Image 1 (cartoon, rainbow, N blue to C red):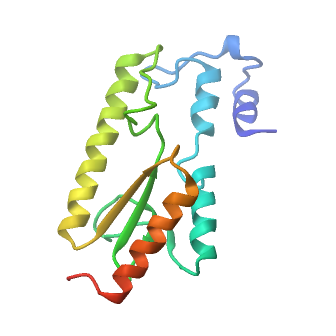
Image 2: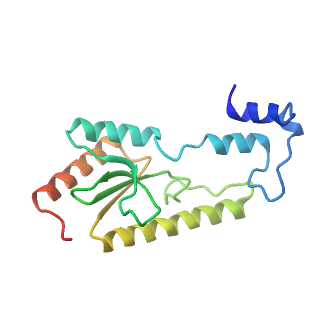
Image 3: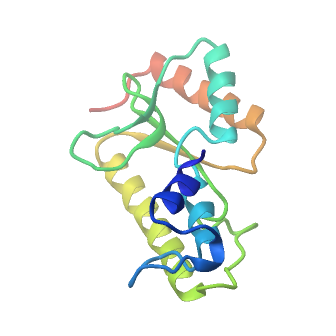
Length: 165
């Protein structure tokens, strides 16, 4: 039994039509709630494919790690010795200029959410650069082979000439 079904059973709610969002909830319906809970924040298909390709090139990295211990933000791949942080951004959640489509339901909330994500991404990039890190960002729709090759080339190049501390 999946967690959403178990939750509705435990609460005595038998179907989606009887469910009501709690006051101030971000979920507009039980179906929306299940949908939002199912969205992965890590280990997405593009991430896993890029990780597999980079690993096959002999590189080792940390997954979903904080590049800077004091910064509460994680990169998808972190190469600590060479100070390279890789982010694979989802087109919707990070406002891809090619693929982002504003939502039709609760558009004010979700558009603001995406704007906050983009603002946080730029802030993360700046903080990491100031700490001597190189930030690589890719969109989920970019070819995984090309992304993996760029990551590999960048990390190997920084191995031969260490980053400035």
